[in-house]
Structures are given as structure tokens and as C-alpha cells.
Image 1 (cartoon, rainbow, N blue to C red):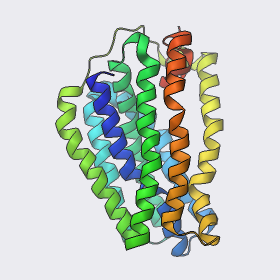
Image 2 (image 1 turned 30 degrees about the vertical axis):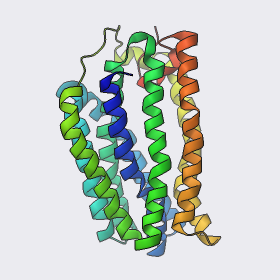
Image 3 (image 1 turned 90 degrees about the horizontal axis):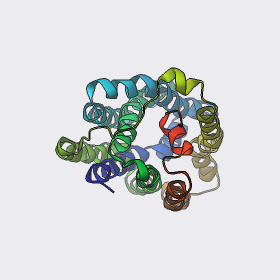
Image 4 (image 1 turned 180 degrees about the horizontal axis):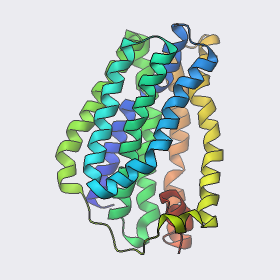
Length: 278
């Protein structure tokens, strides 16, 4: 793993630990202030839609303006929206604020993924993305756990403030470490968006990803509500998400190793990056 990839993994872990501290807690917070299950779904859905729709233009912006600028902007957006969440209680207000938080994800994640692709040797792309996804999903495990602990001990609003502080740590680290870590793109044959759009393998990868993430779209908003009805507190709910995330993370290294050994710079990784396989 190169130094640049290590920096991206550290920042991804710190960012998503902070960002995910608010995830399951937000469902409980909204429900405690009168939101229905539909309202909770809309709040979380606004975040996901904004993150998804914003990824294409902000990913392109990282090509034009640089990875570092977009990653820093994403961290600032995430921290500010975490600070705004405890100021509001209504469904529409929470949906608006958490939707804006999706812009932070859309700015940070494509730039971080692109930086991994820029720095990864051609024969180690799968391994590089295994490191990245391990950091990402490890944070998705740890973040809800820490958020649940803070919410259990100090309340929901304190968990949002702790989320902002965690992201602020990531921002401080990024400000220092990204100055030296921005890599020049590795020499690879590129593809235009039109070529990507016409490639069946890319579509297969995208469709498989969307289908798999339906599960996440159900579990993250609604499991906390079910667990709360069954008498589990925020800390116990955090432990469940910790277990889920660690199990998910455990598969990352074997998958990356297998991809590198079977196809080199594989179609699967290309689909994830949005680049047409050669």
C-alpha cells in the first residue's frame, strides 16, 4: 500500500466514523420527536439521494479542481450539517439538513476513490480498493457503535455534536496530510463516459451494486426503530451495527486478493470505478 492510499484510508475511516455516528441515532431522534416510519425513510432517503445524484458532478469537479479541494469541502459540509441536526426536530427540517449532508458524502467519496485509483499500481488495484473499502466499512461499523454509546450516556443531540467533532478531527488531519499525498494519475487507458454508458459489464456491476444496497437502505433507517420497540437502547443498537459492519469488513481483503490474482485490473473493480473494462 502506497503512502497516498494509506492517507486516503485514514481520512476515510475518520470521516465515516464521525458521519456514521449520526446514522442510526438520527432515526431514533426523529421518531422521538414525532416522525413516522415514512418520515424517517424520507429523512434518510434524502441523504442517500443527494449523495448519489451529487456524486457525478462532484466527481467531475474533482477531476477539474483537484481531489484535495473536494475532499476538504466534503468534510466541512459533513461537520456543519452534524452541528445543525440538533437544532431541528421537524421531519421537513431534518430531511433538509440531512439531505445537505449528502453533499458532503458526494464531494468526499468520489474524490477519495479517484485518489486511490490515481495512486494504485496497475497490478494492485484490487488490493488498493480492498484497503479503501476496509477503512470505509470499518468506519460504518465503529461509527454507529460510538454514536449509540454517546446517545445512551448523554442524549441524541450530544451524539450529533460528537459526530461533528469526529469529522473536525478528520478535517484537521486532511489539511495536513493531503498536501503531500495527492498523487498523479497512474498511466492507464481511459474511457469516455459514452464508452462507459455503453459497456454491459459496467451496467452489470452498477445493477448488482444497487440491488445489494437495497438491504442497507432498509436496515439503516428502520432497524433502530424496530430495536427501540423491542426495548433495546442506543448503545445496544450500536453493538448490532458494529457486528454487521465488522462482518462486512472481514470479506474485503480476500475479495481484493482474489480480484488481483484472477483478472489483474479486473472488470469488477472497473465497474466500481465507473471505467469501461478493457
